[in-house]
Length: 328
Image 1 (cartoon, helix red, strand yellow):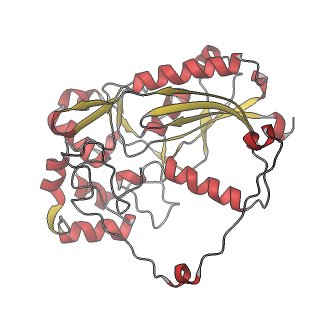
Image 2 (image 1 turned 90 degrees about the horizontal axis):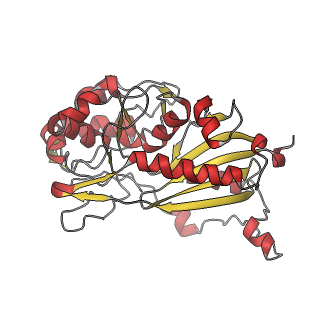
C-alpha cells in the first residue's frame, strides 16, 4: 500500500464548530463534514461547552465518512486531531466528562489567580512573572482565562466537579483519551497551561516551581509524551462502533497554533503543490516563499509580556486574548 492509498481520520475541534475529514497520508482531502457548537455563557465571565456533545458529533460524522465509500475503511491507518486550546475538560478515570469544558475565554478563576500571583509588575508579582517568562516564554492570565484559572476556579468554586475529576485535559488530549483510553498530553498541548519548562522539550515533566506558584493539583495533570508522537491505538469498542479496523494508531493532538506552524513548514519545503480544490478546476497552485523586506529583516524582535488587561473584558465577552498571551 502506497502513501496515497493510506488514509487518516482527521478532526479539527474549533470553538464555534468542528470538522471531521478523511485525508490521504500525502495530504489529499477526500471527504469532510462539519457541525456547529454551542457555547453556554454564564454569569461572572463563565463560558462553557458540552464535551460529551463534541464526542457525539465527531463519532456521528466519522461513521458517515467511513461508511460513505470515499475510502476503503481498511486503508485508514491513523487518527489525528487539532483544535482549540487553553480550555479545560474535567474527566473521570475512563475519560468521560464529569463537568462541562471550561473554555479559554472563561474568566471566573481570575480572582483566585490574582490572589496568588497578582502584583505591581504588569499586574504580576515580580518574582512570579520573571520565573514564568524565563521558563515558559509567557505567563498565565491574571484574568483567569487559561487552565490555571480554570483549575483554581474548580477547586474553590465547584468542589463537586473537582473531586470527581481524575484528569484535567486540553480538548485535543480529551479526544485522544476518548479514542485510546489513555490520558496523555504534550508540551504543545499544555503550552497554554504555563506549567512546563519549555527551554528543554525533552524533559517530559511539569515544572515543580511553576506548579507551586500556580497552586494547582499536579495529580490531575496528564502525563507528558513527545509532541506529535503515537500515543496508542483506537480502543476496540470505539473502532467497532465507527467501522474502523483494529489497531489504528492515534497521534497526539496538537493545538491550532502548533498545527499551523507544522503545516507552514511542510508547505515551504515544497515548491509546487496541487490542492484538491485547484484540481477540480483544472489548475495548479504554486506555493511561493516570499523574501522578507529589508525593513522586516532589520526590525528587532521583541518579547511581549502579557498583562492583566490582555484578557476578555466584562463588556466584550467574546474578545480574544492578545498575542502577548496567546493567539486562539
